[in-house]
Length: 627
Ligand SMILES: CCCCCCCCCC/C=C\CCC/C=C/C(=O)SCCNC(=O)CCNC(=O)[C@H](O)C(C)(C)COP(=O)(O)OP(=O)(O)OC[C@H]1O[C@@H](n2cnc3c(N)ncnc32)[C@H](O)[C@@H]1OP(=O)(O)O
Ligand SMILES: Cc1cc2nc3c(=O)[nH]c(=O)nc-3n(C[C@H](O)[C@H](O)[C@H](O)COP(=O)(O)OP(=O)(O)OC[C@H]3O[C@@H](n4cnc5c(N)ncnc54)[C@H](O)[C@@H]3O)c2cc1C
Image 1: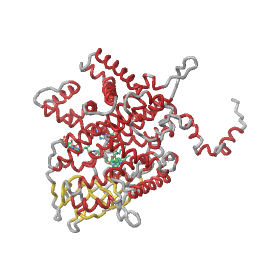
Image 2 (image 1 turned 30 degrees about the vertical axis):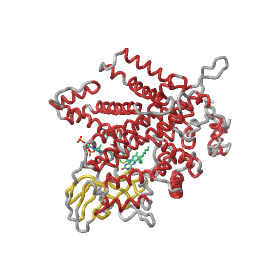
Image 3 (image 1 turned 45 degrees about the vertical axis):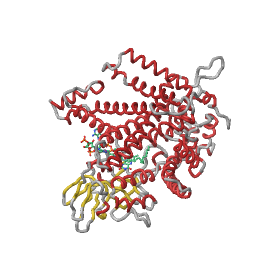
Image 4 (image 1 turned 90 degrees about the vertical axis):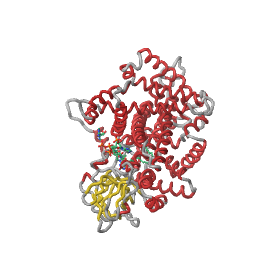
């Protein structure tokens, strides 16, 4: 019934202060206040309706996204929202759009790789959205291999310009979000050519469309690359294709913080690592880690609430059937994901600190922690997005048949999230970067002391490195194993940061105890999953492994009465979750039934097509012997 909290009994079981846990999840009292205010602002505004997305044809869907983005911008300015509040508003609008790339990559690229003069020129235009930008790096033929990009930027000393050109079909820019139909400018990555010498990939600001009539400028061919996975989902984004036919830009539109080209055409590489040209990707990877906890927690919230509502089997003498959340199999699938959501939240906080620290060091020309930052952002982006993508799908399955309905919110959540395993760096390619970092670390141990434990096999590689073959062959031969080592390395970071979080002062009755239980579930479920490795390397005895599994089950029982309260602490509105299964009040069945009749297919009792295609079948006079 309306107004009844079908989960009230579950909420009464909580053994901790949920309001205090909301502050832990939000990061601070201030963050919680801003989240509450902006989330309500969005949820209460019908202009931000999103329950129709999966039913709109692409052109209508996209136009609706443009409308929402323009309306959001209008509200941001009317209400004079701060950058923090504006970012929260875009988060709660919950619709991928060209603005993600404008604010999330185009502006950071100029801030990270532009000179002070270039920032003074371009950032005010971008902040006022008088230009709209995208990040055009990936090409049809190359995405992972940035050094393989083919677009050229050839310096013309006669005119003090760069000529931007797409020499081959595979050099066409392909995938950049916001490029297809909206962006007026791009930070474009191209090979810098001076007097016939290739200086590698650099960033350039290129205008793509007229600010008067939005038509592509001369030499520019640009469009959308077409429909992507799922209905609605990422099809609100205009991922584009772009070709340059000898497009001329002024020399001062090469981003020149890291390296410069003088008026005379002299190339100057500052004494900074060339990899700083990759800085925007590092920035986004660390943000994606924090975002993974948001996506995973949304799916877990839906699956947990529904698991408490859903009853199946187990009725005694006509009494109520068993809540599926009480089945150990349901708990063994759901609670590690709940623990992961919290774990990723905390490692995301730490990674943001690490990134900020590295950026401050760079200001002082201290590059000592750059390799660690690269390895951590790459590895944690890979780990958290893979677990989150798989976790959203598991949450769909945890909801049985109803999880497959669009009104569960889970199919679209999955469809919009899964590209995170690919964009900003394919997850395997990034893990190989971590493995390279690990190998370099191990080789630097290099005093003949063999690594032990789960990285013992790296000693064999090191041995190969020293005697029988070169690093490349050893690395390539064992790359699949090295990727597993990289994952283990990243898991160690996640567990360590969860434990460090628990060593902080955490106010609120019972809050720390719940987080300790979730931390235990996180590392014990990992131990359980990989117990073969631990047993094979004698890190664990069979008895210890059995004890760990017993403790894991005990922790499931400890978390069970608190599960609903632990997902309430995510503080998501019903509007944001957009899920009948995940409703705060648990009023699932009536709302599922009500929603079904709103589907356009039910606008008529007899479906379109009946008379043409069904009636003739029913009325046909079959003359086959079979009948
Ligand atoms: C779910 C929504 C989330 C939204 C959250 C909010 C985000 C903000 C908004 C964003 C909106 C939407 C997100 C989607 C948009 C997607 C955008 C993109 O996809 S942009 C394109 C991304 N492309 C890539 O990531 C390409 C991946 N490839 C690479 O990074 C490189 O090619 C690499 C690293 C694989 C290889 O580079 P290279 O060949 O140059 O190096 P080597 O491997 O030879 O290594 C040499 C040396 O360099 C070190 N190195 C490499 N990279 C870095 C780095 N980034 N920083 C520092 N150091 C680096 C490497 O470790 C080696 O060191 P050595 O000491 O020699 O071993
Ligand atoms: C939704 C979406 C949005 C995007 N937005 C943008 C954007 O705004 N701007 C932009 O520039 N790009 C964008 N991209 C492109 C994205 O960054 C690339 O697709 C991504 O970097 C992967 O590169 P790739 O497509 O070349 O994959 P590939 O590298 O071709 O991967 C194919 C397979 O090859 C494997 N592989 C590749 N290299 C190696 C290796 N050395 N060793 C072992 N295996 C390897 C990979 O693991 C993978 O299994 C977007 C992509 C998507 C899907």
